[in-house]
Length: 212
Image (tube, rainbow, N blue to C red; front, top):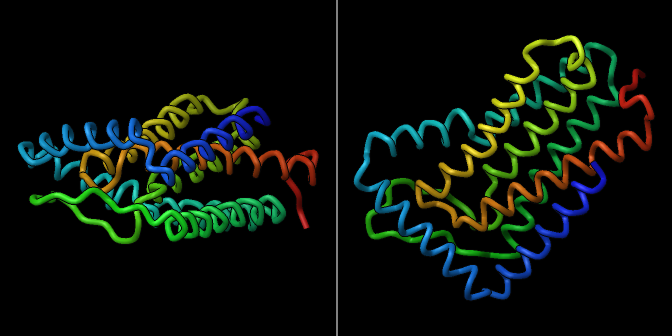
């Protein structure tokens, strides 16, 4: 866990520097991927609509935050209030960091003469990818603490989480509202935040849970 947090943190920092410096190879890859997917999105309206539903409803950040809210309430009612506060704090930190980075970097989103979707605020990092990564990571952590060893559905839940994290990143680039590097940054920052959350919680509570 520690190595994952360190590596993802360093990679996300490197990507941030490259974006701010407007590294030409990175921008070329971003543009090539965006243009290729946008051509497909324009010519495949049915598939594009499916991606919009997944992006704007199923994997929307507010959907993810609702899952976190339910988890926090569940943990609180089980009198695992320390863990509930860690989960809530990590989610709030994610939202704050996301908006701060968007303002500080100020990266423009892709612009198209024939857009298939729209989005507000700046591009870097992808809030959808970041929020989904943190939410799914935290939910897997909570589930692992309670049911991993005796729950046969663990593999299915893990696959669902991975599909959600990767899938939401795909939809944001496919719909032409993010560059590929925005999404990768969201994933990397998300992995780092989950790792830091788990490690700091362990450091303050060796059993990773805690009542009042």
